[in-house]
Amino acid sequence: MTTLHVAIAEDLRERIRDGRLEVGGVVPSEAELCEQWKTSRAPVRQALATLRADGVISGGRGRRATVSSNALGQPFDALMSYSAWVRSLGRTPGQRTLELALRPADPAAAAALHIEEGALVVQGLRLRLLDGVPVMLERATYLESVGRLLFDFDSDSGSQWEYLQSRGVEFAAASHIIDAVAADETDAAQLEVPEGTPLLRQRRSARNPRGVIIEHNDDRYLPTEIAFTLENAPNVRAPLVRRAQP
Image 1: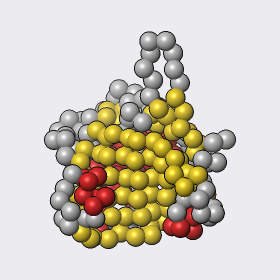
Image 2: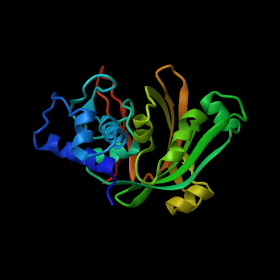
Image 3: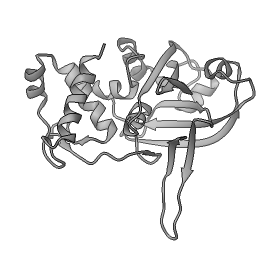
Image 4: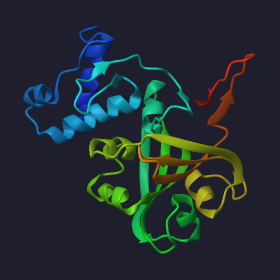
């Protein structure tokens, strides 16, 4: 069953596709959408956060949102959730939540978030799907104040980033490290490959507008399904791009 925020977002997408909402035009206000859908502001805000994450609309937070061009693909210099990237390809994202827990930070988590060892963090483990096929295992570690919000969210229903943005969390910048790693026991079981299989790994640290790291991810992709590419030209700086294999 389609959740309300997904239905609202898809209705707005359809209006943009058929020209009822033109690029550069204003998006209906939260109040107008609440009236149209006979609902509270929460699903409306989550729908608008989804469209912002996808690059479909811009603005908000005191300014009327406007329709913007929606780029296909995801360069790593653009902040976009996995779900948004998959949708931009015209494909279907999915997820299975394997764990979401509040626990003291171990040395690795403390170093990644620049906090003291033993401070509370929220950690999640999710299997990410592309058209129903497992392609990536996501390990996320959040500052406690941010991650606690996820206990009110069904993480199997969609993007954690989009939900957090709907709750007022701002992701302003991120740094990425791309390398290869051998599948451990957990990777192998969830991605259905032998232990030791080479996986593509993206480690991402996301910061808020004050420069505080609020999330660290360790995402491990099947290289048979996902690849990272970089196109160069003389004197042109081009971003690294994640793409789905044909």
